[in-house]
Image (tube, rainbow, N blue to C red; front, side):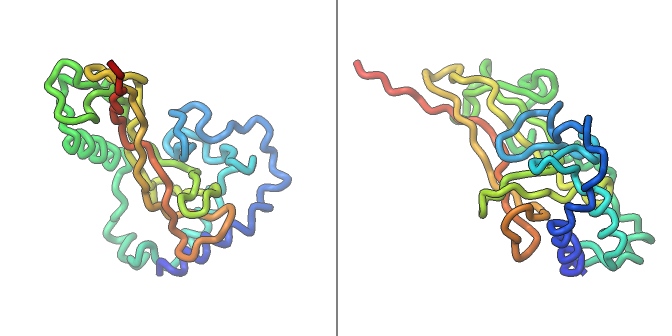
Length: 224
C-alpha cells in the first residue's frame, strides 16, 4: 500500500549515514549542468544517480530502489498486477505529452517557437501580459526542492523508469517587455511531490514545491 511505501521512504531521512565512507570526491552537485531554477534543482534525466544534494551527500537512489522492491504495492496498485499489465509508461512519452499539453494550454504555435523550446509572440497580436515577455520552457524531473510549507530542502523521489515526477517549467528570457514599456517578472506555481524530508518530517510524505511557470509584464508607470 501507499502508506507502507511512504513509511519506508521517510526512513531514508534517518539513514543518510549509509553514504558515509563512500568516495564522493569528484561527484558533481545535482543540477550543475542543467537549467538553474530557484526552488528545484537536479534532473533525474541528465544528472548522475549519485550526484550531490544540498547536504553534500549523494542522492539516495539505491535506498529508494530498495524500498520500492520491499514495498508490496505502489500507488495502491498490487505488485502482481503491475508486473502483468506492464503499467510503466516510457518517460520520454510522458515528457512529450507534457510539452504538447503546455503548448496547447498556452496556444504556442510552431511559428512562435524558437529552438523548439523557447518562444515569444512579438510579431503576433498579444492576448495578455504573459505574451509580452520571451520565455523558455522544458521538462525536468527534479531531484531536490525547497518545501513551500517548511522552507527546508526536501529530496524529491525519482526512480527511473517506475516513478519519474516530471514537471514543465517556463522561465523568463527577457528583462523588459517587448511591446509595453515594463518589466518581465517570473511567476511560479506549486507542485505536489512525493518527497523524503531532509528537515521537518511531513505527515503524508508529500509536499509542495514552487516551479517556474511563466513570465508576466508589469508596466512601468511614467509621470508626465
